[in-house]
Length: 343
Image (cartoon, rainbow, N blue to C red):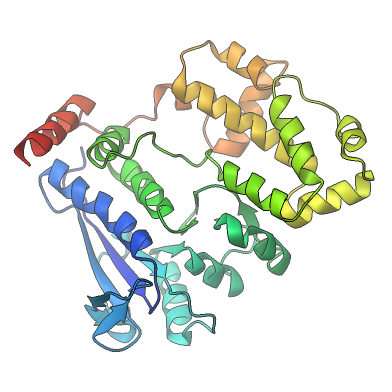
């Protein structure tokens, strides 16, 4: 256990920010400190100006420092996270904030764009060629407006020092992943139990129901094709068969996939299969070859290669859990139980 690790979050807020996204960001940090028995995580509220900042529901929070004062802080840069959680105001982002984010990245500081904060990073070129998670309601316009960014339907994405999430409760999922990278899966799972969050949502999970809702709203011919893909994961259809079922030309179908889903039909199909495989690896103990077959792969070697390219780890590593330093799940759960009985 790296018991001396400490990480500081500088959280930029502007008027109209989501209170749910903010509390989802800070709650797992508080629980982690209680389970660890020391203040591994600290945070402060950064504002553009003024002493308070207003939430989307009208409440006001005290600001700890403004941008200029926070920019002067250079200590412990590599264990710091600059979290950008701007409000609902549709206007240009503060130039000082953009400059601070650029400076932070050059010093090795992680930068997290939450909700509209992810769009700020995309708008100013931070995310060109990188993965980015956005809320389903902004997905279509984001793909069209920022063609150099690889948008996903994940709840969160981590690509190097750049972190993005869909906002609202997805902030909880992003912070859990950061805590997992710092202290391991046991602590992450214990925090999830204390918070009564249910199943941990990882990078492979998608805003699936929202996708269907959006496709239905625009009356897109993509919806029946996506549903057909989901039904045939174990026995994938050819692109020609998918085109025949859609009632549109191949070129038109490919254009719709790129416009609304940000990728080709083949890549989206493969992504669905990897997501199915990831779920089976985490939620069952069936043999790896059976996971491959259930996900539409004819050989274990091909499955392992595609899975690692998409997930960044092998199926075996997902099944076993990555090696972590010290601390057992029992020790964290004992503390969690003690907290709940003492309340």
